[in-house]
Length: 491
Image 1 (cartoon, one colour):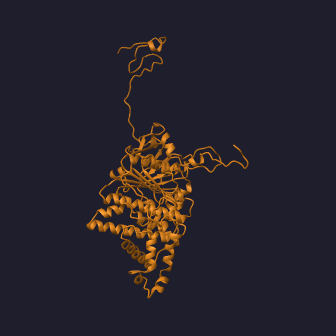
Image 2 (cartoon, rainbow, N blue to C red; image 1 turned 90 degrees about the vertical axis):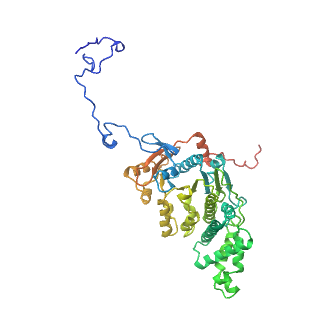
Image 3 (tube, rainbow, N blue to C red; image 1 turned 30 degrees about the horizontal axis):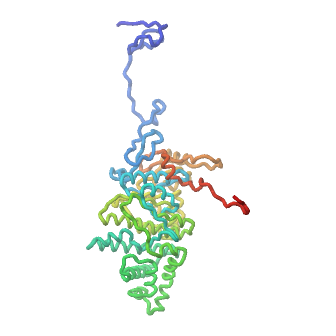
C-alpha cells in the first residue's frame, strides 16, 4: 500500500487532500481500520445524554397556526373540524382555561380569525366585555350593542329561524314550529328562574305554554313579546283557568299571582327596557362574523347579565338552526366567554341553558368555552348543577390549558388525565405570588393542547403587530385619563 508523508511545516491550506484513513504522520489521525457505525434505537429520555436532539412532536401542521412546539420548534396547527374528520377527536368543543393574563382570549381570537379565513362564520353571543368587537369589525362582520337605549333583543323572537319557518311547508314547517315554541318556552322559564331564584312548578309550566300559544296566535304574528304573554296570563282566557283548576276569576288570580308578578318583574324590574320589546337585531347569515355586545350591562346585577347571556345564546342557536333549515349549510365557530356568570344566577340554569343552546357536531359548530378556573363550577347553586357543569366541561374534545396554580390541577384531573410532566409544565407557567411590577405573566402565550389520553402539545403563540392591536384587552388602562381642570383654572 502506498504511503505518503506530509511535511508538518506546510500550511494547512497547502496540504494535499488526505485519504479517508488519514495521513500516516504524528497527529495526522491515521487509522489502521475504520469500522461501520452501529445504529441504536431508544427514547430521548434514555439517550438524551448521548444524543441530545429532540424528535418531532408528531403534531399535524394543518389548521390554524397557533404557534410552535416549545421543545422542537415545529409549527403546530389546530382545526377542530379537521381533527373530527380525521378521527382525532369525537366532537369539536374546545375548553380554554388558565389564569388571567395568559392570553386565553388571544388564542381564541387567533382561532376565530383563522377559521373565518377557512370559510366559517364567527358568532359571539353575549360578549360581556366587548373585547371581541374590534376583531369582528375588522373581519367585516356586524356588531349589535344590547342595553338600555341601545339595541333590544326579544327573548321570544325566533330570529332567523322565523324566516326559515315561513319559507317551509309540510312536516318541515311543523318541526320548525315546535322547535321555535320549545326554545321560547325554555328561555321564558329560564328568565323566570333567574328573577325568582327558584324553579318553575309543573302547573306554571303549563300556564306559560298556554299563554305563549294564545299570545302568538291572537296577535297574528310569530313574534310575541313578554308583555303580550303577561296580558294573556292576567286575563285568564282560553284554557288557562282550567289548567289552574280555578272556580272563578278571583280564584284564578290568586292561583296565578306568583307567576304573574314574576313576569311583571321582567317588564318592570331591573331588566325593564331590554327584553320586553321587539328585537332590533336583524342578522345576515351570510356575513363573516356576528357579535352581540352586552358590555353595556357589565355593571348590572348578575340577574341582568345572566338574562342577557341566555337570550344571546338562544339567538345564536336560532341563527345556526336557520342556516341549516334553509339549506345554506355553513360551519360556525362560536365563543362563550364568562360562561359561569350566567349559570350561577339561579338553580337549574345549567340544564335549561343546555336545552336552549344545544348544538352538536352534526350542525357544523366549533364551540369555545372560556373560563379562569374550575372553581367557577363550585360556585353554582346546587350539587346537581355542579355535576352537570362538570359533564359539560368534560365533553369538550380539545382542551387549551394555560398557566394555573397547583390547586387547580385537582379539579382539572376530573375532566382530563395529566402526567407529572404536564402538570409541572402548567404550574411553571403560573404567575408567582410576588409584588414585582413591570414583568409579563410567565405563562403569557404558552398553552398545553390536550385531547383524550394523548400526550399534550406545549405550544408558544407569538402575535403579529396587527393582532397585538386587535386582541389587546388592557387598552383601557393605557388610555390617557382626562381630568377636569381645577376650579378657577383658565386655559
